[in-house]
Image (cartoon, rainbow, N blue to C red; front, side):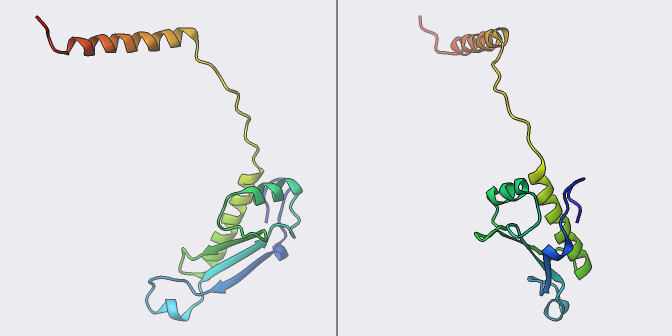
Length: 136
């Protein structure tokens, strides 16, 4: 499975098993194993250390304490589509971890924008003060 230009996951590191889907589905839900359980051991994988660390740091309920990512795909009625869906979700998760976010630089509002803000607040306060009770 291709993640980026230089990162890929070999198929033998991904364990797929068919299970019975939960929920309403009529007669087929009790007979067919159309849902897919995907298990991916992050620590034992051939991913670069950068990806492994970022994946393990994620606060995701799909990642167990042992570092095993478990994805259950049961969105579709067929096993093939659920297999494709599970692999696509794994690929999306791993590639999202690989993207380095730009570091945020704190900025300050300009003097003129601060002045405009305070002037509008003063103007609004005057309008509200005029609405008050009139004393003789």
